Length: 285
Image (cartoon, rainbow, N blue to C red; front, side, top):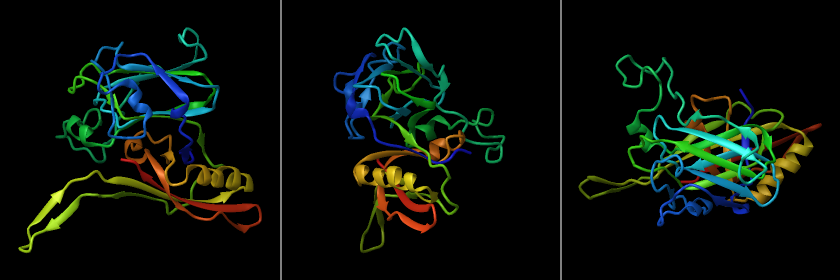
């Protein structure tokens, strides 16, 4: 188990994009805006089309690359590369081709009759309805100038790949993990109205996940230079990406999400050389 990882700040406003082939009405640069209903959509499913390169304005620390609210199908693959040259002729990082969707169920919850018993992946109909984010965590912090995301999803039933938001950031993992009692929750947002006769009508709206946790064993430097600085810089509108456990491949799709801070507990100093901070992250939808 790895300690909680918080990606911040998003460097998407410090990059330029190139590569791939994209819809004229849903262009590549749409992923640089914060509106999560504004998608970048590929022109087709050719490998040359379903990719894009990211150029930073200067060398900056990067630990997380994410393409949020993607539509990649159950058996899609992706590859992340990094370089200090624009043509990627000399790579400093290559993830190799990875499964976009790993197994998300174990034998404990699957039955022999389930269509996905042998591979444990999410069925396509469930996948399409799940809040999906392609999140890639680099094994170590990168300071490369150029990054590229390639997607191989030739059988996508939509006939294209799309994503709503690019997230590229450094990440903070505290020296000591969050305390027991952390909570992963879900807030439904469907509005319900009722007639005088008691008949209910529903207006379905996307819900959101929440993750509330406490860091009770922070050093002074972590508490002030990391926790407090993030609260000040992010506020309620800054984007953060929370990964409770980067080693958890099974439940990553359920636990990891793009969000914002929604609770600002004061940094407390309960004992010598010990500081505490609490966080509530709410998903952006």
